[in-house]
Image 1 (cartoon, rainbow, N blue to C red):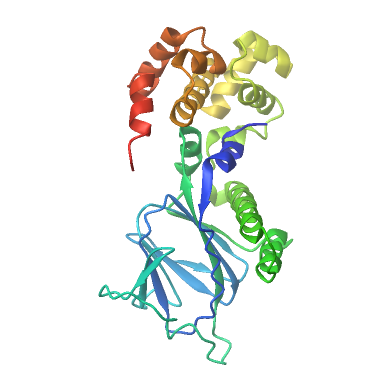
Image 2: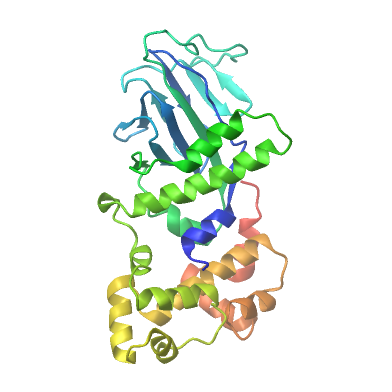
Length: 312
């Protein structure tokens, strides 16, 4: 099933998959100014605070995961009041707060022997696409996912893989980081305080969830309210009412939104003609897609393609 959350896995690219297992002793603080759309943080032992610029500090305990939505900077520290000792610009550049390049290991990266050290891992992502934006826009600045009662097997697998020195290790770590991200997103959206988007909650409904899966799996199909209602096993009027109540959009409006999102992503990442993209997402020709595209996004398909390929 190709829902928005599944599509995110296709559209995110782990950048460097920076797995940092440095042992840091208090006081310590790292400021991240990488301007990446999405960062995943996990604490393997000890505790750490995530302090987003302009936001409230969030405490992470052992085995907790945090999903930080960018591109604004944030700080990770032993305490919200600790001043940054280093600034991380990207995987290749670390400086002191006054701009001097850090060439050696920071003095805080050592165990003080008092059990106050912390060990964490971090991965940064580039995120592309209109579909992925549906997921990101539903997230707070920091989505805190406490340690699950059943544990986190993916974290155990990551730790085990880091301890190995085998060919293909980085590829394995990238894929495990993908799984940790998506599983953490699902855990977050299932939490009461998450205020999960309506399209996510509606997937749990036996009637509307089936219709959403049909739309996502085959947006090019000539769906109608009647055909979707028939597949869902309810009357047309009951289906339209329930779909609108749960999803927040009428069925055909949601179908249009999904088709346009798919078309926008295809235009951005492929060289297919506008006519070919139109037929792939359910429109009869380029003109029909162009009309719907301009009405929904405010630009023509060709303009969207040109803008999406400009350097960031």
